[in-house]
Length: 206
Image (cartoon, rainbow, N blue to C red; front, side):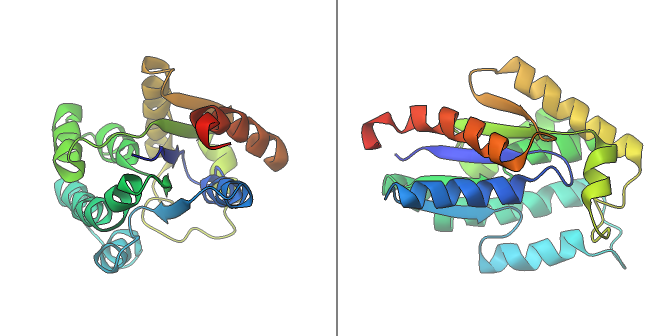
């Protein structure tokens, strides 16, 4: 199985930018790699993403939201992530199960054990080898957004603070599996910190 690396963090923290930079770095090293994202990454996931992200006519019960994310994840793991890992490719995923724990669990208030159970069913107990958390205050992250585009970005600050609190608790509980980075650092410095850690996962390949 190839290494499985996920990026996590609140709105505007730079996950998408850093995941693309890591992709480029691995490609430069001629290491087979796949980059994907949640929700989405498949035809089904793309349709579910539209439902989850749109601003108008989008009242969704927290439990329904949980299962929509899970449905997208089932398809992504079966169609893309697990096959790529079995081909010993590095898989980078912009958000994964930890996003559901913090957004639907800590943010929406759903029972954390229930969320974990749904996550495990959706992934077949697949866990990342490394989770990179780009940490930033909600005020800073939302200020980076040129326009608020989706339901989650439009939530009040208390929601985003609960999300951040959840992330920090999870990272503190499993420091060997998480890489916590100050997302306000320069982009190049963040990429350097990420590569230093990721390269240790790839020593046989480098």
